[in-house]
Image 1: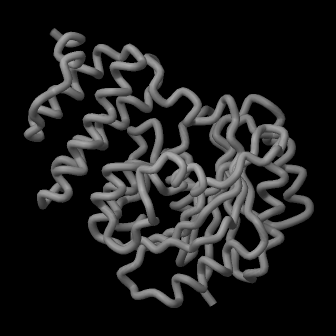
Image 2 (image 1 turned 180 degrees about the vertical axis):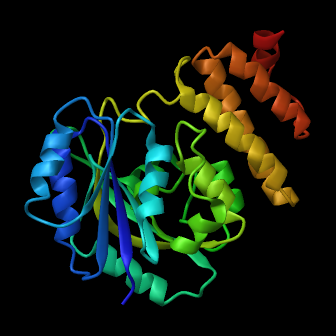
Length: 296
């Protein structure tokens, strides 16, 4: 039987972390290793987590200060022993059967598949339904079907995966050296670095619940002071070094043009210049007039 390590990251999520932990305990797969990492919480998250250790077994790591998601995940990953890894935020939770169903999919796939991802139910801070992740993806219209296999170009062009739903083959993360802890968020970098070498498979079922909170990481994704903007630029520069054909180059240019539009929309003039320089370096032509006007 395959062992699955769930690395649960918590930062000031006292009102949600118990449900997240119990959702792991209630899975029907019998070989799950739960590792909880508290990233310097300033609310009573630590007290909630410690009290739950009286009910069930799990590893517990406490950061004395806030290190960020990437560094905290890497600490949990270093302590893990599972063949497959799930990165779980403390404000999300699993639905029944998530782990076993994703393992079943992996068992049907070849060893060149590194990630199985799924759909997810979305709720607000009080639990009201907001539909599903893939409903939103299709409504926006960037994709008409969910790509599978080697999908580097597709992931470079558009973020259609909910990273929270992923089950990852351990070898993928070992080859990568874990997450890049110099970044403010991990999703884009993980996709770019893994998808060149590993295939992805989509399981068309909502197997977990994601809370869309006003303070969530995506709530201020392009604000002028948001450190995720710098991280996105760094990862896109990494992707430029990995592009190997015209399909990938076109996807890269579409990604850069999208980031240019966002930088302009949110008034990030410093990053607007950097995105424009990267756009030209990658062979981009015919920039829209307002780009030139803004950086001229």
